Image (cartoon, rainbow, N blue to C red; front, side, top):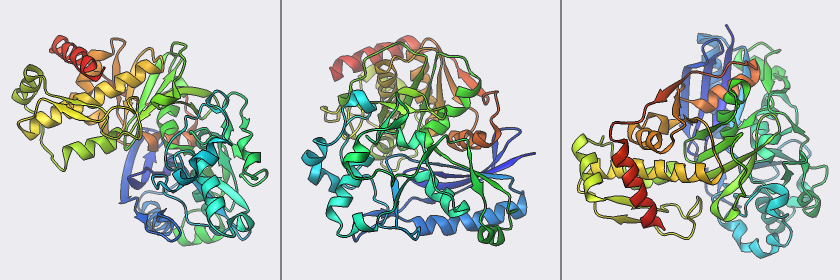
Length: 451
């Protein structure tokens, strides 16, 4: 039996998961909040806290279960800057910090067109190129100190193996630094003066290296334990289905971000103003994609409630026309010019949660339509466990909706980088609900209200 430890860092939580390679399921998962520390010089992620957490639980997992390999997946829109000694040249910027917006006009004059990169122009630090431009311009001495730029998964690979790399999925995640059609750096790299300083790109499934002797000693893992290059988290959700499922299909990776990715869909013109983009999958291929910050919106609107809607709540929402209209998070998603509002007032937490779940499904369906998605839609991550979200999406997507059996789709996808299995993981089909006609009528009224 192969057991793969997966370092899995989302925007909200950092996890270490142990995946059973035979069953493609998690044996154990531990989490910690992905805290943002205050400056100076800017808000940054707690890398040392994560490192201590990962080492502690690698020791524990190996002692209790055994570990045969390590794989890594992280959120995108992030990079790590190193000096010549391999130490941080600057703290790792939180991409939600608005600092880069101060030089937006200057950066806009440098960045390549959407047609060249598939990267929409995004606020704050969501374009890694904008992060780099702003940091290099505003932090004295950084340009002189900076030796290497790593995409985020490979920072952890470096600490485990001592080997330097970037990966194509992280470079292809709206960085402005990558040409997904040519499979090479864009001309922005030269404009930023970073030729030769961005770590060389590799495919996620390559072996980055073996454990450094001191890491093997601290964790008890064998020194020849392989560590993969690593992958962007939404692409980790997509990867299992790239291995064995015929196109067309779509994968919706849910978490803080809801990212919809279409494989073999209809040819469409992507509108970057609606948060449409081109991701790069683990095989190095461009993938039409759409995003909105659905997990963040869910937390904002539920406001701590754990209510489960009753049938009476759902009926009251349908009959009363209670609707949540976009966009709760206006910095992302297909409706950037809309300010969110309630149409009708939910009279209970259960009604609010039903309307919220249907809103998230309608936003997802909008995204899928904008990227030309065809075939079954596979839901990965926490929204796969939301019955109202799944029911609405099943009513809206006549070619079928399936949910992943795994609770942590990103971890399983990252584990498959080690295994390179041809068979995709198990899914469960969601059948159209008995009230599908009423849900479709609700969806029609929601779209009219949005327009």
